Each structure stands twice: as C-alpha cells, then as structure tokens.
Image (tube, rainbow, N blue to C red; front, side, top):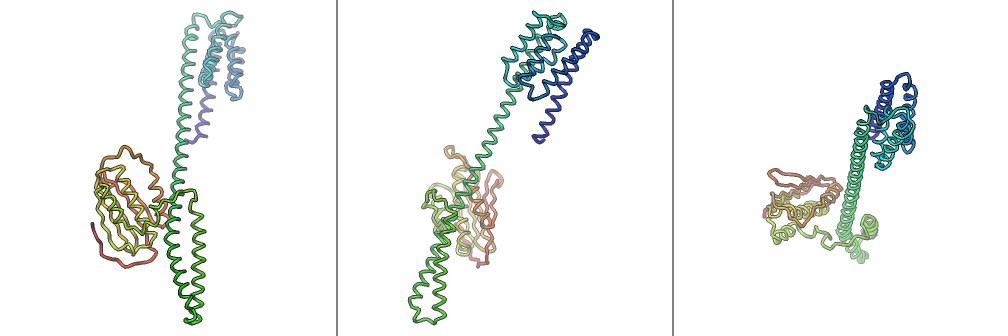
Length: 383
C-alpha cells in the first residue's frame, strides 16, 4: 500500500475511534440520567471530538478542552479523556498527560462538578484505564519513532550505495579513457610518424601520393589531438594515475595467472584463439575480468581452485572464471563495486556480464563481448 493510502486509512481509523469515544460518552450520560445529562454531555462530547479530530487543535487545544470537560462532567467524558492522554503519550508528552490526568481528577474531586469521577462505579476504571492509555501511547510513539529512524537509516544507506555505485562507474569510465588514450594514442602517433617520414621523400613520389600522405599525416595529428580532448573529458584529473592499470593489453592474461600462482592460488588457464584475434578493447576487458575474479577468489574463497577459460575467436570474445568453495579471508571486507565497474566496461562494449553461483558452492563470473568484425580462429592451449 502506498503512503497516501496508509494516510487515508489512518485518518479513517482516527475518525472512527473518536466517534466511538464520543458515542460512549453519550451512552454514559444516558446511563446516569438521560433527561438531565444527555444534551449537555452530547454537546461537550462533540466539542471534544472536534478538537481531537482537527490536527491544528490536537495540541494544545484538545488536551485543555477535554481536561476541562472531564473535570466538570466527570465519568461520562472519560473515554475522550483516555484518547487525549493516549495522543499526548504518543507525542512523547508524558508529563503533560500526567498533568492533565491529575488536573481533571483533582478538579473533579475538590471543585463543583456535575458528576464525580470518584464514585464507586467509576474510580476503578479511572485509576486503571488512564495509566493504561498513557503506557500504550508511550509504547506506540516509541515504536513509530524507531520505525521512522530505521527508515531514515535505510534511505541513507540506499543513497550512499547509489553514490558509491555511481562513483565506481565514473572511476571505471576514467580508467577506460586512460587505457584507450594509451593504446590509440600510440597507434595514431605511429601513423603520424610514418607518414611524416614518407613526406620527407615527397619529391620522389608521384604528386597525388604526396598529397595523400600530407592529408593522412594532417588527419592523424588532428585525430590524436581530438582523442586527447575527448578522452580527457572522461578522465578524472583528480584521480591518481595507477601505473599498473596502463594498457594491460600489453601484458598477457598468462602473466596475471602466473602472478596468482606465485601468490599461492591454484589457477588453471584454458585459452582458445589468439589475443590478436580480438580488438584491443576486448583484450583489456578480458584482463580486467580475470583480474577481478582472481582477486575475489583470493578474498572470499581462499584455497579454492580457479578455472579460467578464454575464447578470443569470432563471433565474440568470451571469458569465464569459476572457483570452487573456499574459506573467506577475514581481513578483506567486500565492497561489491568491482563488479559494478566491470559491468560498466562490458556494457560499454555491447557485451554482457554475469556473476552468480555455479552449484556445489562454486562461483562463476562470465563475460561475452561480440566482435565488430570476424577474425580467424587459432588452436587453443591449456596450462
């Protein structure tokens, strides 16, 4: 049910409760002396009910009106007095509730009144029901405040988690921009360099070829400048430049696996096709997926056996990392944002990332990125 629906039902319930209390006051008057008390008690009950129903009058008008009515009319107005005490207790005004109860009882006992609250038929109800109303109101008020505080904490955690996820995505975009700059800038620089060398020998080349070389060199230099501008907008200048993240495509996944084995992990690597068959961006993504999977296995499944399967062959680059159950490391808390960055990277390439249980306590991380163009498959290797 929506919050507006809950509020409507709360208003309806409140109205019914006040109406029942007012009706009880009228019936009490009828039971005492119908001819003498019915009309004045009914009027007093309606005034008290109106004060209890109107939100702006609930504090401080309603407690005063109900206390005065109870002090004068006594036992017939007691149901409305109990409701007023309950409201005060819910709002954490227990001292005010105690003052109203003592004031009504004292004034009714010592002053001029229509009916007594201290008659044999009413004093037991008065002494038992008023503390019960206050205690119930205090309990309900504390519960509401606790629920509100917990809801605020949950909302705070949700917003914090959303901000962390957005920060992880932004960091991954920045890292992708850095890697793409390192790789593409290198290739564009080579094009500009070679065309520049050829341009120095333009006098030995046909005029159309020399003209095309000049255009090619100009275009490559401009493309390099544009690349720096575009990727510079994606890169976070405040972020520290991690040398280990620079162009990991230049490092093979095999080196990453060898490092994990040297650290004590049991890792098996199976590779189909050659890395050169996949675009550089795919090789970067594969490296990051394997790196994240090995790190997670070290954190959450120490001593497990890790199997890495990579297929660079068309029509898609595929990587799957599975680890058997293991013991979690107590000193490495999980953040959960490594997968957020990976998903951002794989999605940007038009691929899909999946992570979840693989049965028998194992865990599997897979990624599949379609190739933009076909390539030739090569023999697989297993180590």
